[in-house]
Structure formats: structure tokens, C-alpha cells
Amino acid sequence: MAHDRVRDEPDVGLKPNAIGFVDALVIGLNATSPAYSLAAVIGPIVALVGIYAPGVMFASFVPMLLIASAFYYLNKVDQDCGTTFSWVTRAMGPWAGWLGGWAITMTGVLVVGSLADVAVSFTLLAVGLDGWVENDFARQLLTVLLIIVMTGLCVIGTELSAKVQNVLILLQIAFLLVFVGVALYRVYAGTTGFDSIEPSGGWLNPFGAGGAALTGGLLLGVFIYWGWESAVNLTEETEDSASAPGRAGLWSTVVLLVTYLSVAIAVVAFAGTAFLAENAGEEEFIFAQLAGDVLGGWDWILLLAVATSAIASTQTTIIPASRTALSMARRQALPQHFGHISPRFRTPDVSTWWVAGIAIAWYLIVNQISTNALFDSLTALSLLIAFYYALTGVACAVYYRRHLTESVRNFLLIGLGPVVGAGLLTWLLVRSVIDMSDPANSYSGTSWFGLGPPLVIGIVIALVGVVLMVVWRLRDAAFWQERPGVADPDLVHAPTRKGP
Image (tube, rainbow, N blue to C red; front, side, top):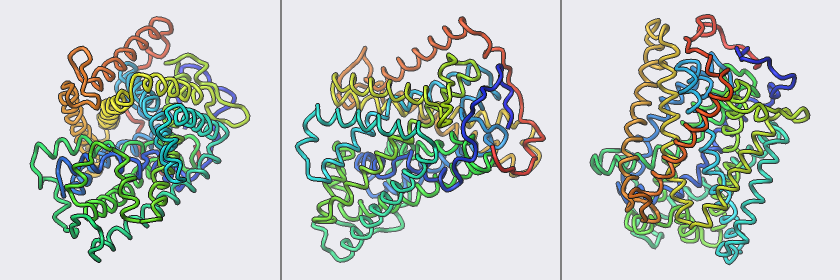
């Protein structure tokens, strides 16, 4: 659709109709890194809520689905690759929009290095090079090379990226299904070697462990769904751009729910709650511990599931950050060179390489401090995610405010649902801040200025964003001339159309 930009569109735009619905769905799934996300949180969640871990994962799905609804309806009236940045700007003004864009961009910077590190580590474990994992120089060098390779794939073209992602998701899901099947078979056969438990429907009750434990579990559970909106960031490059990207985002959350519940039930049933709770501090390497017990000599299958998951997410996590930077630049909210699009590949090459370069620098610098500092920076990620998701939910109701009473569907799916989702995420954001204020709750257990390192990192990122926003406002005020509006009734009621 046409965008009312301050300056004329460049001659070269993103490549329209480069991918279809299935490709967008796959990219949305891979961006969440399902196998890696499960490996990282299953132990800590079980430590908090025991056998009710699947129920907490189900409860965590609710706010994600509600926010995915907001993404669907906002994309319907504004197919902009900047998603939250563009929508919040249109609904609530440039100041809120800029901060939303900053949050999305920084999530990519914080997490790409860690994902690539996990991908390298699990690949080395799968091929028997365990010693290389302990060699910091070799592991970090391979991590940087992987980031460069995956960034190159992003720049070369969205079609190639989609093909690579299709292969990676098939491998990942196949490996996880094998693991789930073998684990459950051994549970019922009584050959686990652990204090296994036969699955029960009661495990899906998120309130079984009590309110305090549920809150802690939700803080972990919500963020394993993060990343599905990468499908919507490709809206300008997707066929049926007014509908397909939003549907891909919605369906990706549903597929993730089924995947997470299946694996969580299999892991809890096979290993039992005591083992998982005792090894909660091992994070993603808990899967490495279970791989041999479940699959024997075929343990490389599960190791490769986590590796392919992290490799795929290394690539797809760059997409939201680079597309958001592109959208911000062409609206004059960032320097113009961030809006450059490769004439040959028709992808945002400059912003993509910038995101990768800053992510590499962050990864290397933080690793020099300590591995715990890297984990603390990932914990800070939750603050940014909750912020821009909640902002998007509110923006949906605000932008559609004149249409919410036109039907029950509009009121529930466009108004009430996104607002409730935003409210839940805001509550989790506040709880996160309270939790992170205590240094004892950080990975390092150290105190930075009397606070936990994750909270300090989050505050610094927010302050840097505010300073950069004010500086750019003083240098170029064009973007800040935009005024909030409402959804165009012609677009709201228009039938879905093909193309960008």
C-alpha cells in the first residue's frame, strides 16, 4: 500500500512477492528458535512449578495470541516492514513510535551473538568436538563467522533466506518429534533410568503450583514465544501482503504452542521434576544431558535440533531489526543511509550489516566481561520485548478506536483482546523490573549500582535510546511533524488484496 512518507520513495524498494504464506510462517517459527527456547527454559520453569510446566507454557501462550491479533489487524491497514514502529507512530505519535522501533532494533543486537554461540556449541557437541566448546577463542571465532554468513544470506535475498529456513525448520521439527516419540515410549515401557512420571491432563493446569510460582514461570514462559512477528516484518516482500503476514504470525504462535507442550510433556515425563529442577542452572545444555539418556548413540539428533534451531534464529532475528531500521530511516527517524536498499538483491543491505556488526561487537565485548554478563544481557531482553509488544497492543485499539463498536468481532479481537494482552505484558514487565532489581536474581549474582545487572543493562539501553531520539529530533525535526491518526475506513473494510 502507499505510505504517506515525508520524503519520496527511493527508486529501488524491497522485492515484492518474494515469498508466500508458508515461507513467512516458517520464518516466524524459526525466529522463535523453538528447540533452543525449550532447552533454555524447561529446567527453570520446572524448578518453579514442577509438573505444571506444560500448563504455564499454555498460559504464556494467551498474551502472545492476543498480541498476534493486534499485529494481524494493524498489518491489514498498514503493510510497513517497520511494524510496531510504523503502527505506534500512526496511532500514538512519533515519540512513542521511535521508542518502539528502538526496542525492536536492540533486541536483535542483544540476542544474535548468543544464538550463534549456542548454534556453534551444539554443532561441535553433535560432531564430537566437545573440547572446542571449552576453547573460548575457537568458539567465539566460529560464532562471529556464523553471524557473518547468516547476515550474508539475509542480504543476498529473501527467497534464499526462506529456502534455507524451510530446510532448517523441517530438520528441527523432525529431530524434536523423534525425541518426543522415543522419550514417551520409554516412559511407558519403564526403561528411562530416571524417576519418570506418566503424563496427566492435570499438568495443563497453570494454577496448580500457586500464584507466586505461576508469576515466575510466566516471566520465563512468555518469552519463549518471542520472535514470531518476524513474519510480519517481511510484509512488503510477501504475497497477499495485507493478510498473509498477519496470518503467518497468528498461526506460528499456535504451532509453537503444540510444539512446546509436546516437548515439555515428554521431558517432564521422562526425566521427572527432581532432575530438571536440580539442573535448572544448566540452561540450554540440559538437552545435551538428556540426549544420550533418551536416544543413546543417536544423541546427535537432539543436539542438531538445538543447533539448527539456533542457526535458523540467528538469521531470522536479524530481520525485524534491519527492517525496522529501514522503515525508520525512510521516515527520517534515523539517518538516511540506514534506508539504503541493494539495487541487485532488493534487501536493506546497510541496516542489515549494521545490525550484525553491532551484535558482533556486543557479543565479543560482553564475553570479555564474563559469560554471566552475556546471560544477564539476555535477561534484559525480556524488558524490551514486553515493552514493544504491549505498546503494539495498545496502538491497535487506539488506531482502530472508531471501528471497535461496529461489530462484536472488532470489539473483542481488535480492541479488548490486544488491550488485555498489553495489560498482561505490562504486569509481567513490572514484575520483571522488581525481580531484576535484586542482584541475587541475576546469573552473576553481582550488584551493579545496587541493582541486578539485567535491570542496569535495560535501563542503559532505554536511556541511550532516549538520548539518541532527542539528538535526532534536534538535528532533523521532519519525522516529529507526523501526527497521530485513525485507521482509514476504506482500508478497514476493503477485501484482502494480492501483492504489496
